[in-house]
Image 1 (tube, each protein chain N blue to C red):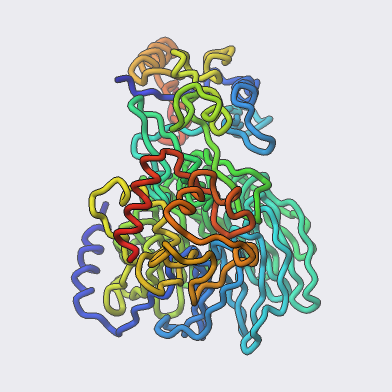
Image 2: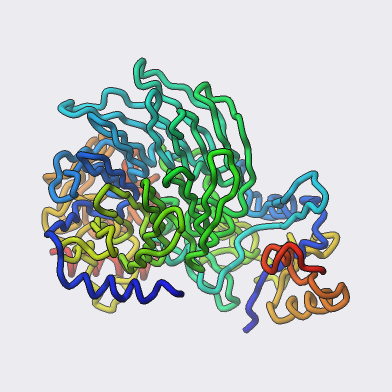
Length: 198
Length: 411
């Protein structure tokens, strides 16, 4: 079974936000919630970098380890999903997630927070695949249709890659080899020193 | 991991408790702690704020005011401040039964509180900050961040510093005008004054120090798990991760004085007094730890009693209920009432639990059929207006297993 992953190549992202728009449209994500967003570092300055961010479907997901009602689960494709019928909107997962993925509706009944919402890797939720019940709660289930997440499909520069982790790692490796040493990941100098020549 | 030997030493020292100080007063995860010269205050998922003696040994006051989790607390010289998931901020004075002021419920929960000489500040999940004038008890709100306000600290000169999920640190003058902005390298989760600096814990496992002018000072990468709590004093800073590890560091060197395995689950709150470090989190216990070596000061804290696990599917489904409901008789301290003897009981009739008005106005008798119906359509539809979060068990087999489990273990 493939282990599905996202990878954003910061050397290619041009902050067009097509991934954000595609996600909103595909899943009819409510106002105030962005399952995916583009983060730009040093915006407007030389060397600015943009990265498309969403749930990264962690192998050892911190959100799952702090959930008091155990609403998270990992699919056979290594996608981290949650059950909105179980979620109580407590917000603890928002502290645990390093990527800011958990989102909450701005309005909810009785002053409580409502259900958490996040990227599903276009693979729905616990409801039967491709049903109306699944769509209303989680959006479309492209994986069940044999398709990859739409955000990556829409990426015009192929900065955002989605798919079998082994395959996208190989694609990225080829890019790095072509570009040369130091292009492997944004933050190379942060990790190995500002004086490093890349 | 040079600090491991210190942790081992700390655990060895735990064999000789200094003083019996076990303080397990919350019936659910503890989300917030604050300590002052004469009191400790905690806030929990059970909807209660508890004021303790400064050593945390004796509860002096318990208030159940907020609807849902009490997400933040702060100390006043003559009381305390509580704030919750309901978006309300309440100021409690010693000797008064009701808050001297309470703000209206909001759709966004309060994430953090801070107290200054003249104002009380509350940061919200939606990025807004509330300023409450302590003299006039009037308040204003204004947007501060484009995401959760993760930390608020009041500097000695009265300026407020906020950090938020928009990866910004902003310093505000007493009139609420921003005077400085700095970018943060990662997602901040909490902030505290520590010595002359601001200590911020981040989701990437780093504890980063900032000067009041926003300049980044030396940092420590403590963990590969997100850090979610921080506390500071003149001489120490403490940080905690979601795996229950707590670090006690000396200032200004940030050398590890102790690395403590405080609990199995997340530690959501820390507080530093002159003579102890308090930690609390998902297991509901408040632990008092020595500033010398992190050793527990007192008997091991008792965590929340877990629901019986008989290996059945019903036990598995019930896990989502256990954080709010006990199965033992008369245990109504959790966010919801005990489910002991629920079948045959009229709605909102268990003595010792403060039900919502909406639930008390209903005429339902809980039977396997009505509880099944509750989880079939969800509380929003079946018991509208009640405090229960909208949870559903859509699979009829799972509902039957849950009902069977409650019948077997709930008396």
